[in-house]
Image 1 (cartoon, rainbow, N blue to C red):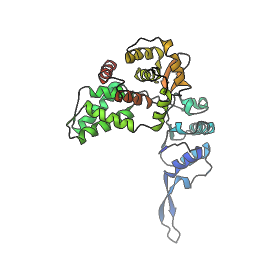
Image 2: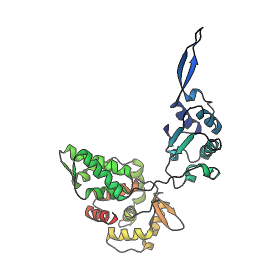
Image 3: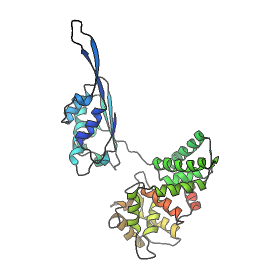
Length: 329
């Protein structure tokens, strides 16, 4: 069973969704001198107490005659102030584990660690398997493009898979989204080959369809009445930086990219206040790992948006991006 969380959910409403979508068949005897067996199907929610506690959930799921996997997705969308929700999930895990219930609970969400998703997780550490999903590598993202082209029976410019990988910043979601618009442009124009021109048209579509919150945050971070300020080029340099598996980049990497973007040499001290502003007064658009002075974008969609915008406004050269893609791969 798989359900998605939203911002209005609490512990009760999530399990109401789960139980409403699981059915259980009960054999009943019909009345009469010769009773007959009759199968009656009930949603599990009709057989469970409406006041869901960890033990009630365990007992309800134990009524099923088969092992159960319950996937609760987008756990990070639950209200952050409601720590009681994540505590109840931890208690549910503990209850299922203590009674060796044949139930696997899969909790999925965007976070740095399990502690960001599950309060008091240390008490159930032995019952948890933490699976970190790193960003995909360039070769893996390129494979998405080449396999898709093969299925469609359409050709590709040689550089396109590498450009797609560079623009996607490790996120397959963005690879699929941009490829969808790019390939559609080629097919609608009757082309038997996908080119950089089709990608350019797709980038315009992506910019126009960008989430309002992303666009608004970008303008807040870069808006200024003083000409020649570095806010926009520094943010672009941040978007171009290579990142580790957790999405972090260093100020030194920003310095090198800023030099490439502006064709001027800068010291870290020249833009350190800009990075701090992106973390606080002009954001927060960046998050910071304070001890090691590492930074990353809080919204992963911001990086591809910044790069697409720079390409569309000629702030970034596509040939240079292709060269970077080849070096990264």
